[in-house]
Length: 412
Ligand SMILES: Cc1cc2nc3c(=O)[nH]c(=O)nc-3n(C[C@H](O)[C@H](O)[C@H](O)COP(=O)(O)OP(=O)(O)OC[C@H]3O[C@@H](n4cnc5c(N)ncnc54)[C@H](O)[C@@H]3O)c2cc1C
Image (tube, rainbow, N blue to C red; front, side, top):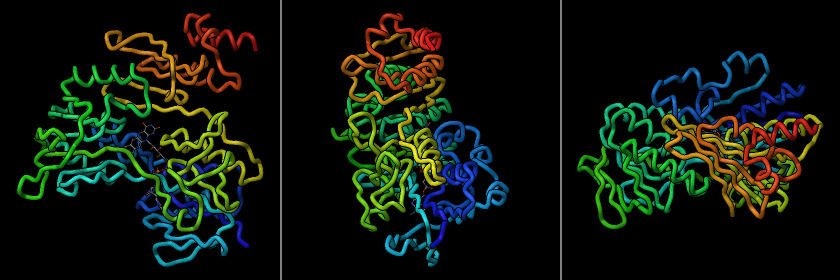
């Protein structure tokens, strides 16, 4: 019986698990098997500063020395291909079998492949990895017309950068508003105004029907549902992701929009946990299973799991938070705001800032801000408290979250 902890996936969650295990005093073997070649790196800059500055060195969490000093065996450029739960072994793509005492599935997600004619043409790209970002950066330098399929965070971040670099940019969003799955309507409106006023051609309710061939196997444009053709010499498809859960499913673990775990991040097999983008975990008082795609979630779940593996189990109940940089605007979200039935709004694009407090059934469930870091930090502190804040309490403080936080702190 081995005490080896095997981690599948060398992304944000996989790396953090290994680092936290050493910080928490775990003395056994740690092996990370990661599909991507090279050192683990952070993804958020890939759609932001990296496209402008190509600062690859600054993406890595730690250099090679860190792994050596901390006795973390990084097996990069390989995948875990199957799991034998009875034997507690995993098969690796290089043919080896590795025994584990505990297996951590931190396999993340991959870009959703749209079933569109022409999606395999040259100059049709996706953005998930450093390798993808290198290609995108290179192509952006010579392209003149970019069409982004999908008006979510990543597509809009790239759209803003490309527009600032002088490209003609069109964003096609299938729903009635931008980032509709994750932000409130006032935030969607703010960013619609920003991108439109920057010269990005944003098309809402707009479905891509096909990507057109220029006759040489490269994209010439995108055909819309109504037959209109939008010309392009570069197409970015950014239409969501699917969790990498196949190895878990093949091993008989329950998978439904991610690998299902309990509030300790354990699967139904006590020797296997799942964390980060690939995991579906219970959230809030109703215990609804959700899956999040954020750095906060990957890092906090890795830390929580590490504590359990060194003998200090605790429930995972961290407040979700997120950010997105689009042009000069910093969007920050504290809490989960989908399902809000009441919004309190302050500011707008003319003020260059916006705060949206989101309530459901009279309780504050989240706060979305643009360029108001103070409100975001206050919201994170307030929302992390066990007792929910009522609309009346927030109203009593004139919706000033910073004042509310001070009042709470004074009360002890
Ligand atoms: C362009 C971009 C911008 C982003 N911007 C933000 C942002 O601004 N803010 C924010 O909070 N979040 C952002 N995110 C999301 C954030 O990066 C992810 O939530 C985070 O990386 C999740 O970490 P993870 O370890 O769960 O998955 P990942 O970081 O995706 O890592 C999973 C790794 O596992 C590997 N893998 C898959 N299957 C196997 C296997 N069978 N064996 C071995 N390895 C395997 C994958 O190749 C990958 O390297 C962004 C993501 C992208 C792509």
